[in-house]
Figure (cartoon, rainbow, N blue to C red):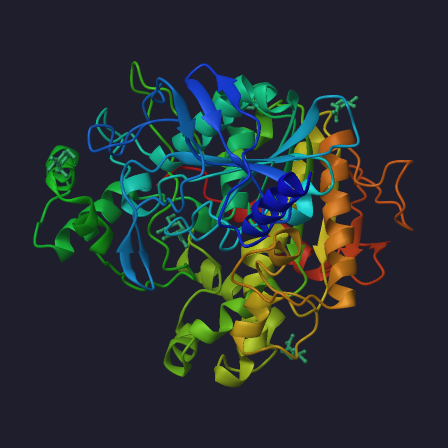
Length: 545
Ligand SMILES: *[C@@H]1O[C@H](CO)[C@@H](O)[C@H](O)[C@H]1NC(C)=O
Ligand SMILES: *[C@@H]1O[C@H](CO)[C@@H](O)[C@H](O)[C@H]1NC(C)=O
Ligand SMILES: *[C@@H]1O[C@H](CO)[C@@H](O)[C@H](O)[C@H]1NC(C)=O
Ligand SMILES: *[C@@H]1O[C@H](CO)[C@@H](O)[C@H](O)[C@H]1NC(C)=O
Ligand SMILES: *[C@@H]1O[C@H](CO)[C@@H](O)[C@H](O)[C@H]1NC(C)=O
């Protein structure tokens, strides 16, 4: 008796010290048998690094191939995977990076198959990975959902778009679709419900989801979506001149060509590390565009190749009939995370440029200048643009890049579909507003771009000590998100939350202001909305280039 107890005690201490990993139940999927472990806190099973598709230098720039099968038991416990990208420690990752992590609650209250949430990371389409450094699953899995997070290819490896068979474009988005297909096919083996899949994501992840909603390739793959701070109908989310961008990149390594065949030849022969190392800068032009160069593109129909999108997303939204319910939201002060990237010189040079993106088209320069002046007046009054006006610039960013496109997308969904749409503004200021903390504008009100994700995930990187208020926010936002995933309603009858989140109606958008005490309210920026609605309905450029 004593012997046995003693042995257990030793085992238990080893477990606590994490020297012995307690196994999780084995899972059999078509590829083979998987084993995982029980998380350190004991509340969920984790299966890390499951290959969901195959990418190597043969499928470089293309849709990934089918995932590998194996004999025996695949130990889904292995440490860190990422797709090739620039990190603080240099270029890391490998081309064979299409792995995903599945987190399953140990003791779910429900005996039915569990709702599934699939997260798509942001990172401007140049970085990001599924690991627990940022995306720890503990807060969400506690609420009885299965969480899946996967890697997808980024930068040129994910987004070279030559509109040819060899490099049709959007390889990174095709990875996302492959991951969703894997979930649909395999998640039941983990106890998940393949008919209750919610995709959610922030920033570039939100842009991705907006594209996935527009894409016909995803029909039937997910049931609901949460789009946090990003939209495919803002100009910065689509690379409208992908071949020009590719030639710009080739130029910096000594080639002068715009021929797609030659460009493919150059990039397909290079080592992936050298590809990631290429840096290029778009020349600044008269429009107010971002410097982003690795972005999804509009593909061409190519026989035998399944495209993601073959038209501009806003055009697809006009006619698309995918009937899913969506939550759209932005942070209350999106733009301030960009403020530190501005220099005095850059800002002053804006006085001579148009204060809108190049997705507008005017019949004359005079007309363009008139609209530019109107926008300048709106955000800067009679003042010149300068470093002292950096908050006004950030407001312009907030509205033009984030708030307004999310509202336009909401309107498209509500006008054409049977979908329910919920809108929110994340306004909470707490100790986990990591991006605001690093922006240099900590004392500004509200939250900035990306702050919400640190209340959804317990990354290893971030403070172990969590304040009481922050715990309340974590509890609130994870309840809203998981309720939506389970019931299609963030505040169902059964909720303990002291408010109800009403969906928006066609001519009456309603917003939940998520804060210490959340409440419903009107659109945050009606004048800004009217300004841009007016401009876009008159001047939106409708062709692809
Ligand atoms: C492609 O992968 C193979 C096997 O890993 C390697 O030997 C070869 O050098 C790679 N080619 C390029 C262009 O990276
Ligand atoms: C917006 O679209 C134009 C082409 O219409 C492009 O030149 C510009 O770079 C885009 N802006 C971005 C990605 O910010
Ligand atoms: C959308 O549908 C309308 C009416 O059916 C049609 O006139 C229009 O051309 C369509 N637009 C696109 C982009 O397919
Ligand atoms: C510029 O920003 C400041 C600070 O946020 C604000 O008080 C002012 O009203 C803004 N100017 C305009 C014209 O909106
Ligand atoms: C799945 O979704 C349906 C409706 O969309 C709902 O009735 C059902 O309860 C959900 N199941 C789970 C496990 O959440």
